[in-house]
Amino acid sequence: MGGADPDDWRPLMEPARQAAQRLVERGEVDITQGGEVVDLAGARGPIRIRRRRELPDGDRPVEE
Image (cartoon, rainbow, N blue to C red):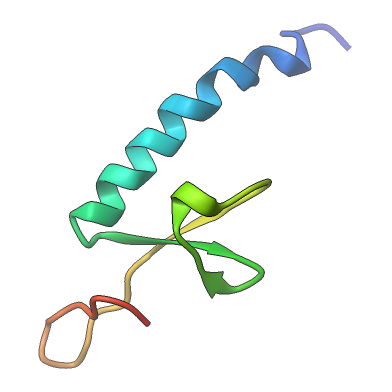
């Protein structure tokens, strides 16, 4: 198969993590590993970024 080198994404990891951290600081997303919310600064390996759930009154929880 043709296409880009599979390692071309590696230089984008740090900018992606920085963007994720900004979204965490704005209260828009959580960073998770193994289904648990983690601090991005201490996360090693693959992470997931999930949108924070809204509470019934429209407020977002600070942490779950």
